[in-house]
Length: 112
Image (cartoon, rainbow, N blue to C red; front, side):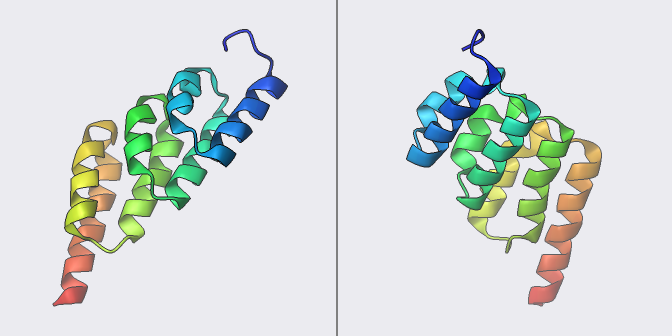
């Protein structure tokens, strides 16, 4: 993979995402461009595949992690969401954690 050109990497990524062959994605993760990472993350977030995102979250930059925070912040807060947030907290910075905290508080206030 490290020697494949951008066109070949994109073709492989498209195949992986189209066929949902996410085990292969982990092997490719460290060789993706930022654009490929964004495409992958958006696809996984749309499918709510937090299990796969959790496996490759170290490759994502702050912008990518902001996308994850946005999904959590806009989600209805449930026990399942809380578990996923807990798994991702070590990868978020202070600002991202504060945004999540504020959205959780707002969500709870709306339920009252």
